[in-house]
Structures are given as C-alpha cells and as structure tokens.
Length: 423
Image (cartoon, rainbow, N blue to C red; front, side, top):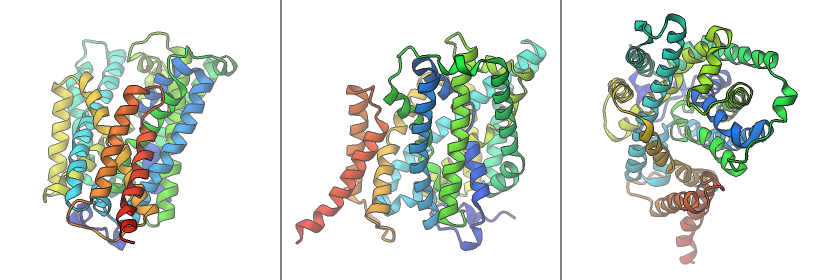
C-alpha cells in the first residue's frame, strides 16, 4: 500500500520519511538540470556571444541560480513542507492561494511543453530510422506515450522515482549520453577554433546571464517538494546545488558548442537534427529516455499545489493533471502559450526574494498566520512591477535578479516599519 501521508502537502513529513541523502538529491537535480530544453537554452546564447562569452554567461548564471535554488530547498528540508505550503510562513494561509494558482498554471503548461519537446525528438529519430511514412513517426503516438509514462511516474511519487529510477539507472543514462556527445565534439571539431568563434553581438551579456539564471529559478516553486524528504540541511543544499550546477553547466555548454560547431540554420529543430546525426542518434535517444523526470516534476508538483488549495488525493490529482498536460500537448499549438508561461514565471523570482528574506534574514520561521501578511504581499507586488518595468525599459539588463533583489529589500523594510513606528 502507498503511504498517502507522504503526499500530504500541508503536513510536514515525519523524521521516518526523511530518507533522501546527498546522492539521491544530487541524482535528482543533476537530472533536472539537464534535458533537451537546457540544450536549446545554450543554443540561444551561442550566436550572440560566441563560445567564450557563452561559457562565461552559463557559469555565472548557473552559479547564481543554484545558490538561490538550494537555499529555497533548505527551507523545505527544515520545515518539512511542500513548496506552496512553506509559503504560509511568509504570506499566511490565505496568501498562498494566488501563487499556488500561478504555479499550477505554469506547471501544467511546462508539462505540456516538455511532452511536445520529447514528441518532436522521438518523431525525428523515428523518421530517420524507419522513414516519414512509418506509423512510428506519428507525433500523436509519441504525445500519448510520453504523457502516460510521465503521469505514471508522478503517481508513483517522488521517493520511488528518485531512489528507484534516477539513482539506479537514470543518472547513468545522462552521464553516458553527455560523455558520448562530448567525445564526439572533441573528435569532430577544433577546440581552438571553437573557443575563438566570436558572437555577432545580437545578445547582451547581461541578458544572457538572466536567461541562464531563469533556468534555475524556474524550479523555485517546486524544489521544496523534494528536499523536504532530505535527511539534513547540509545534504539538501549540497545535493541540490552541486547536482543542478554540474548537470546544467555541462548540458548548456554542449548546446552552445554544438550550435557553433555544426549548426548553420536558424531552424528551431536544427540542433536536434545535428544531435540526431551523432552515433545514429543514440546519445539523443538516451537523453530523450531520461527526459521524463522534468515532466514528472511538473505533474507531481502541480498536483501538490492543487492539493494545497483543494483537499483531494494527490494520486488522483496527478492522473488528472497528467491527462490535461497530454491533451494540451496533443491539441493546442504552444507557440504563444510559451510566452504566456514566461509571463507567469515572472511572478516567482520576486516571490522567492520575499521568502528567502523572510526566512533567512528576518528569521520568521514558526508563526503561521491565517490572514494575508500585508508587508510580504506588498513587497511581492513591487517586485513583479519591477520585473516588467525593467523588461520593458531596460531589456538588455535582465529583469530576474533586479526584481528578486527589490522584492527582498522591500520585504525587509516593510516588515520592520511597524516595529520602528511603535518605539
């Protein structure tokens, strides 16, 4: 029988349920730091910055992002609460409704988008293997296959997935595929020429760093869903930070390098075409097989966020959300929806600026109020406004970190104002 208490988002996990060690969390976040979308992110940077500029932006952006990600993970480990439930410490019980709703929307969208990315890669490999007319080259088939598998993993729960799937064989598939791609790059390109390839200047360095940081920050609303099962704060921080840093840095650097070395067109599938030609597409196939963990995380955490609002069984919610993600991937074009998802995602950088300040600086860790906490809410709103103002008037600067810092400063200021006025 499955222990449903593990899936209760608003109840802290028990000491007996804290079973994930450093290696488990490293495996999870190494895997989540990789993937086809991370490869594409590296490909976006390469034309504008060249190889040296891309690597520097990837290093700086990933380092900043993983520190913030791991700190939020520590909060989940210390409180034992899921990501959305841990927000009650900063926003109050009524205050989590809006961020939980935003999180549900973005996770359903990203889950659908992950299914689309896997579908496109599988369809491309099937066409190369059996021809375009083969039934195995049908995108609809792969949409439902990947949607079902990701949903099944989400229903099994995080402990079974991390300890059975990822740690035993998933992480080794990723290491093998990335090592294979790295060796192929070394054999078929000149590292000296690649290093000296300059960009065309179409992307400012600050904006590139912002894009890389956002890859890590996109996981902020769900990191505690998994680190709450961690054994200690130290293992939570190191496992999350080291795993995501190594995985994301390696995969994004490969995306930039392969784009500069082998891609000449601007087609969105050009990088996938280049990768599919490496060793009969086997490395790409290995990445594709392990891509399910991203969709699993989206579906499982969307179910937890829904459970924080509605008292329903998380397993049933996982089935429902997985079906919804698959239907969206199957029947709705996602070109414009992706922009909508990025817009929704803009609310989470300032939100967790507030959360980190409230927890680590102001150290308000025990009091959970039923009503909204106005200072934290006001700081969050100002952070969101900052994000969109910077994005509109200073697009080359990057809006993620400024919005997070402004929200953090406002949270500290607003929270201390009542105390000072009463002296």
